[in-house]
Image 1 (cartoon, rainbow, N blue to C red):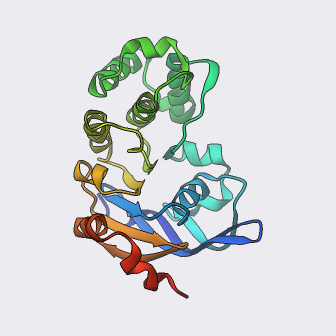
Image 2: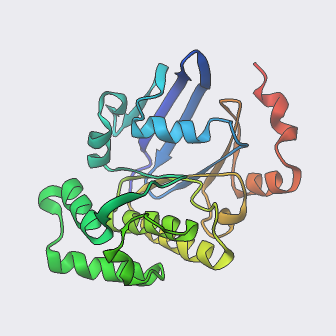
Length: 251
């Protein structure tokens, strides 16, 4: 395992329309490490996730994002996915008419190509991942996220993660809407997927970080990373909130 960043973000500025949302982000993700990005609503956390994945609504006005030294910003979203970038959405969308089992099999085949597992091996991996996440296998015949509870949607996101085995894992508020038992189960799935990947967890709260211990914690306020540290920084935020860092966000 190399200490060189798998994903490197340099002086990233992002706007939507005339509004600048990200104002100079520097962040490096290293294989085998978990980074947590914390901040209030509207601080730019989800924007960063969507920009990494290639959402067309956002304009990168300055800076770069490098994946293994290559310019990620020149890739289309499907090319980023094939290169190993995975985003677990904050609000997963329903896809009526598309069965979960077919979706998962075709997703793995599309991203892995010739390296995709055989049908027998895929079924073995799928069953093991469902068991690990305490997912009823009846879900495989349902339509993607159609009528799913909040907890089912988040477990399904981690099921995809465990099967796709991406190089870059971005989890946008995966903890929202989960009870404590579901939190532990989802966290176990995340922990089992980090080996060989670089992970960025976006969250408001310390809660999930008690189970998915980050190597680094960063605080985003008003489009800037204003503080970085270890897990103790998340504990400070839980105890003190974000106000004590507001002055760091001033230009």
